[in-house]
Length: 634
Image (cartoon, rainbow, N blue to C red):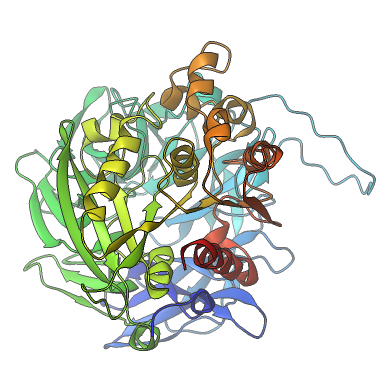
């Protein structure tokens, strides 16, 4: 039997593996509690080939071993509030102890080399005050970036660094002022902390960031990322002299899945050592700089992940292992590394690699029961050339496929526009193929992992060459005798929502469209999205004042009168990335012209609600999707 919308609750997720010096692994595992109708997470201990619960949950995440292997720090809501705080537990087991009590909660943590201190990231709001007044309060907006999708209102708050002494549980604030200070990393001697900061000139209207280093006891910070426009993670060399960072020197390449690797020295321009042949994937782990001066990292190429190494002095990149899978959440400890691995037949599992001989093995099989009962779809990869670029696509086949039978086809479009479909298990595509559809997943120009030129080809050209890439792929597959060209559908989410709504305003071959969280009116999105300015000006070629004609020309709303395809709009009401007013405008425009359209609003749902919302709403997204397609393509 194939996967159904109801089965999304049966899938188990794993994340944040941490590798101890003794070879044991602690990771976070997330599953849906059917009785309580909520997602719950707890830490798992994997040792001697078996996993068992290590904490009770129900909201434990981000485990990290102390350097001596004696303790594990992790995030859990505080005892007297719902914001995440740092808890510490002995690797021998027992009760966890809360060691932070910061008003803004904790976003991330990193251990000091002596295992006696932690540096944490916590949001500090200078305007927060508990007056005891329950009456409605006004909120004053003073900057463009005043709210974040998923977190909501931020006002004048910024993420700052704090050092927590485990002997006293006292927290000392290290950073302050403008800018978010993130991804801290301790120097090997414990005297300095390197971190990522976006406290740069023009931060309110850009996505630029830099690496800074400051004393762990507090003091002045120094910039170390000369020549870079964006950085996302940083680690120290084993001798504490240099840094390695992942980021970009090209202001038009901002996606963390398309990065370069750099060696940094104070006062010297960053030196690139990897990222040309394959795209370096963020974040890089703390132990990635080995004592042999090799750098260990994940790199993607054409939707496939590889665990790679390169010498800190530069040279040829070497593949340790990989291909035909997707790797994330890398942790390196000595001669071994652990990551979360996925493939087209495996949603996610813990994967252990011997860095000396390149051998790797799956340590878990958390979804074996679901995969046994709900067979994954077979996948074919194909590549074709169009207008100077090789375009790659993946075609999923329905269960029991028979080449002598004709099948309806769904074109599924990724977000971004710098996202990409990879060798991984995609729930949307598995559900659609399970309902008897061929599913075409294309990586048009703009997709990451195909090189910076391919990535940047979409700039100022939304709905241009990328649209033609998608249509060329649909044309190519439609030539196959088992494709029923009278039963074509299109689905997309986020930028995929933009493109699916753009398509039905320019092409009438599709008999049904499911459009999730779309960008419909770029002119209004510029002023309402949490990244409308910092992202939009780069992608669309200017502001809403200087670029009106282009924004209107590139907006699907402009072509609403051309739409003939029945359209279903699915949108979260608390989406600040692609605000729900985008779907509202498209719905009214189509309805006013008596088009076949339906609009579904998902309450208390941000942009990523398909994975993070209430289980009922997650299931309903997929159920409404398949019901719409079956209504028009059956």
